[in-house]
Image 1 (cartoon, rainbow, N blue to C red):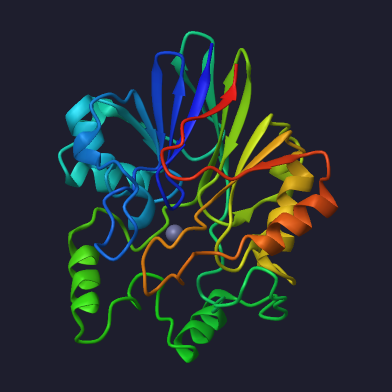
Image 2 (cartoon, rainbow, N blue to C red):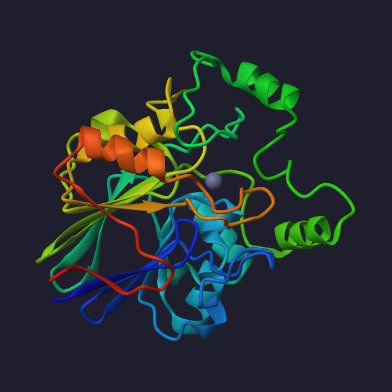
Length: 304
Ligand SMILES: [Zn+2]
């Protein structure tokens, strides 16, 4: 059994496990200013499953197209299922999950669903990956909302796309037409288990450490964007330290980053997340793990 991985931008990947095609998120149809990933959802002719990490547009959008065109089953939260129902995806194609489930993907191949956490979108994180950020610790939700309001963040999605420029107009149109929710629906992480090895995937920079420390994947796909969320609190440190902390808990042989490209300029900076500090921190904390850095649609052979 061969397993290949294609990165499709943001935290979206296509995993081909033998004859079975599994999309991890489905966000390939991006704003015109974002670099093209080489595949649109309309061009996807084969998919068996779409796993959705959470219901924000930059993850779930496109799942409805793939589900409609291919009959793929969508695995995700109740919020993900609610968004899919809004596009007339039949209930029979929706595998509602909240963490604790195991779904069969093919003979000998299953996926386990784990509860996870979203990155701290309520606090500004426009730093390079080595930028250590402290504070905003132990706040209640109403205090976090005040932090977001003070910094002009609003909500993660609602704060985007102001101004009169053509770029701003395109972003507003994208935000009003892309499938998605203002709510995360509860972030989920997934462990795909196959006869030739296991693959962990998350699509936002947050985790429950007690969950991760009991997972031992061969490959870990770790989201690298924003202010990391460790057990419900913003990491007191840098994004690079967050990624390394997760890698240290998971102890994979192979690490691949996600969510680190320039997925929505000008919201995301040119070149995306600065990966160099992450490379250095991973080499220090998990020296035996190998960091792979595939480009879009590179067809990386992961396991065999
Ligand atoms: Zn999100």
